[in-house]
Length: 285
Image (cartoon, rainbow, N blue to C red):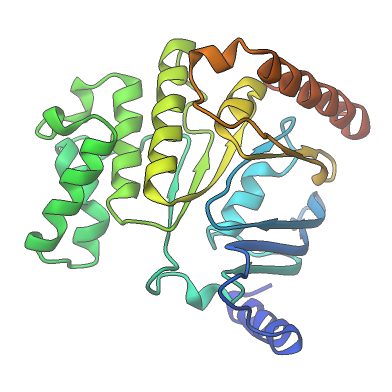
């Protein structure tokens, strides 16, 4: 489906069902399917609503379509069938005030010749934002990820975890309402990953963000999320929607608490079911 055809089909769907009001989901997947030209069915009738302020993790075995769905949420891929809505409207609403998104990929993808500050400012420079307006945003973003003292450092002088912090700062500098993250900490050691999870959870709670986070890790999903969507593969589909109802701080004590362990068991059981249904291979638990 070409982008123009997809936009027209979305507009027609909105005409049928209304444009959505203030209470519309930030993201809505409506019977979304994805079939590639080689015949591979990546997604099959995914139905999913994500509300403002939620931290939703997509969890499942390799090949279940987590990253494909995230790319659709970012407007980088189009469904073969079904519709994606952003704030109850079509893709044209993304980028308007109060309806902005940013994406963090698996790799930090920093410009090696540019400082941390210059990397974080890149999306604002591409918008031709005046320096007087962009610099306060960049400073705030670097403070949020703990890199304010490293603003003049080049990426090669940073650890992998710090490079990923810079990538997150680049996304936060745009002041997004919706943050999409595709396994950003998957290549990091467990200690660094746990620290970044805790910092991300803190940023989410303070910044009025809606986050969609792809992960293979049960532990990470439970620690971060208000909801975990479990997917099965071949074709990719949602098999469980688990609320992580754990008030109070998400800290190291939470990681060894009975509720944490019970949620991990519940998700592990669903992943076992996902593998049985899809013939996939479990990722990191």
